[in-house]
Image (cartoon, rainbow over all chains, first blue to last red; front, side, top):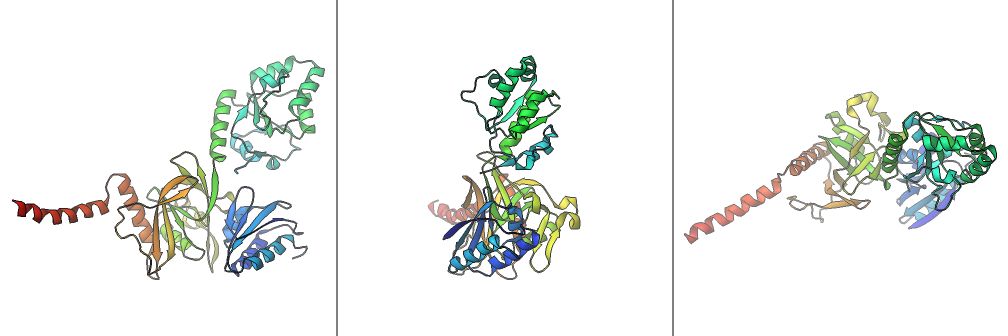
Length: 86
Length: 313
């Protein structure tokens, strides 16, 4: 189990389409991946879950992954939240 | 930990904002308790619960009116220096300009309601207690089947949403797809709702998002429902033993409350919706005092004991 907290610094903020993209990124991996904010914990492979997370810019979220490819999963998702451009 | 944003309380209670320059969406309430700041207005700040909502009624308002301008400056500055989420005045009593000005400087929202103080307090405490109840989100689908709140869980892509869709087509009601927010309002009751943002929506892989309320009508959705029964879908494992009689109940624990849980092995061709419907109906019947598995058990026992009794005669 790998956990990492990330501050959302993505330049373009987060909109519905970015979540759809993020879910696809997460779904590539076999690991179980979860996202946590202060109040919620959702499955990163579920589009409805990710939409309901409603993270704000500069909020900190925790990415946790468990499985054979957890390290790659966490680092790719972390990159997603901190990307300067799309 | 649960959080309520001030704008939600304002909408619910139809409060008027006297400090519109402060964004109520940024103000978070974490405590279901409230405080009436009468004694603090007199200058006594020991044990002051400054993180609570502050509610002022006739007494506080009348006392504030009686203060001199210098005293107002001093007391208000002290009171509003705490991280108070908001100060609410009841009975449409407007605070003086000094109060609003100092509140604005300290970034504290000042709100007004026309309701009477005691009943307003009671309602706010009740509402906050539900909203700030211990809370988790689970990955699953919550459907009302014959009045039983049925939570269907299982891995991504196992067919939860499809089962829910079929149940809706059969006249049952959707509460939430994919993400269910569960609140423990008492030791016996868990309440499930949909996150505001995904309410009434279902995601079907390959089709996308559908709006159940607009496709199937208002009678196909429900805002909240208790969680009475859990069905856990999993891939059929032939080495695993599944419950064949259902005499003993299995339980799943959420926030310390136990809910009856059935593990349901799935295989192509099994009609999940009908099984869910039968499970809910059977659960209702058990609640009404009849248990089919027990009756079968008794019939079998009677059959075995019957001939022995005859031999003894």
